Image (cartoon, rainbow, N blue to C red; front, side):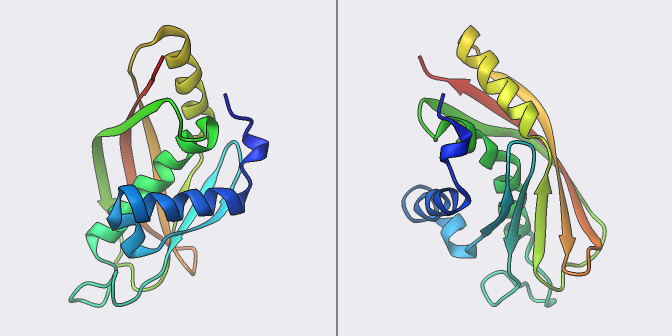
Length: 157
């Protein structure tokens, strides 16, 4: 397994940029930024601008979904270096509490859960599913949305 300490915030931002350029264009389109990342927690920011705004002047559902997706899954890249892994989301529940009329910060504190999944999948060779939670807050710290997502991980042998 790749040592998480070798994947600095700058390196993870570069990986995110390449992911948006080469594999998942929607990520590149909304231009997310990793604000904070460690073994437990990740915070991703998506700015409210023309590309992410809907007809009501708030953040578009698709941009909110990209932010939740990244916050819930970026730990899998952090712990594996993105190699030898198959990861997907199996289900998603979203509760929108307030219109996102400013930049949104997506936070997940499920790094330990994802690390445990990766290690267990590596030892058993099985695909594992777990729930992760992501909160979305505006610049004022007000809760905008809450996401529950089922992540599915399998380590390739």
